[in-house]
Length: 315
Image: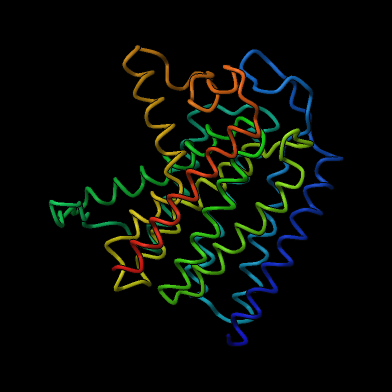
């Protein structure tokens, strides 16, 4: 283990502690989430706790870059600028509900910043079929992947511990992938996401003392969408599998959101209207506890992480 790896571990440990401290501070100052007919909780609870994990992830990346130059400064600043835009617009949405149009414009601008610097998928490898050239269609696919996952992660942040738990598992998964492909930046961002999410989970595990809010969930969804795009450019021998690795690491959220969206479309429902028809929400309505449902999704995420590591090692 070299000095850079030891240093990154130290920064990750600081992120864990800092995230917990900031989350507790925000808990004392945050706006209150009042339960309504769509809520999965019954008590007024502070929200916006995701600010802590956003701040510590960004500070951790900046410190790592200053000390060890893990990636290009241009690439890092484009990601941080885009992620900050996502976090800022989502925080405003937490304070006062913004229109869907404003949020989507911000999401596509942020996605465009990442694609402009890090590129997009110009081909897609499918099992049993092989490689398919995408051309400019790949640009649209990458943009919609980023915007879609940003919103999907937000939709899934509806019960205690589920979004933070998924982020903890996926963060560890990306750190392990970064280790395998020898990409210290991917290792660092994965470790920082895992540590910051764990620090937040100290206060968000059921019964939650604070909620993540859109500021945290949208930031996580955006970041987990762009990591495979960033890894694609640096991991030359693993480019063709990075999308599948990214999907496997968060597959429970993708499957739940995908099936829920298709079901609502088939019924002619307004997909932008708030609802309680996700699988995890229906399980809570059926009487299962927040802890049990979150643990189920975390377990499924761990399975996906194992598969993603096997895929990476075999490639």
